[in-house]
Picture (cartoon, one colour):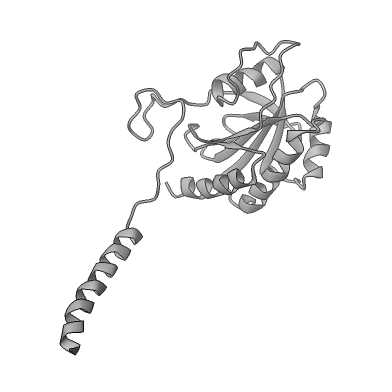
Length: 209
């Protein structure tokens, strides 16, 4: 009887071991590229790429594509006087900031959609209100037309037509995750706590690529 059970048990143990080992050796899930056209290879130049930019942050430092060079970063659009979605979005970003605060390869880039109100000093106060006293989370301002152009044509965060004029206004709750090659790798609803959990997980995944 014992031999009979051994004949059954041994193959079962082998099957379980085989499937467990396959799972352990399974490659990490690969994040897609967004805005890509006919791109099939990593670093393929046909991937949509964030264009060059130049703004000013809460410390009155110039922020350009060189600032984010070789960094993974999360980007958003907000305004300091917003009383609806922005407080929720930036409260959620605080948890992302705390999670990756000590990682030299990570950054958060928050763009104002109301540069007339959100001056350097206003952004500095706003950053401090969110516990930011370093350069791991940058709040930037600049020319409205360029800010809006980057939101629409660069980060693909707004599909509405506009020219950044006086009557134009962007109000989106979406975040974008950008890789070290300035490619978009994910979009997330900044008002949804479950989406923030996914964002944190996918930042970690991207760091292992």
